[in-house]
Length: 103
Image (tube, rainbow, N blue to C red):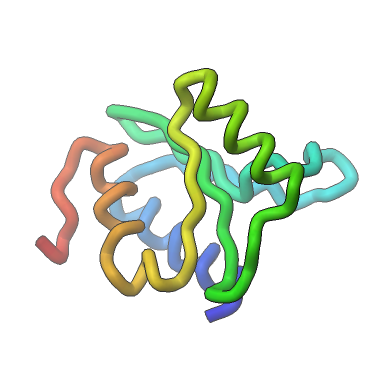
């Protein structure tokens, strides 16, 4: 699964659970290392970096994640295996305060 496909699947889940999803996608304006998506539900917010199965975080992405977590923000990495396992759906559903459809 490509990162673009994972992004589309995340956006579809966000629509299903009524979670706002902002995708940082313009390298001219977006800060290096900033997470791919910012998610805002009715119960919580989260920041996620998206990678392919073999993708890895850059030094800037690791540092941004460390700083976000130190500030008490919900930052993490999602890969295709997380979509396939249901983890992404469960986390997006939790942002909205709803149960995953697959549970």
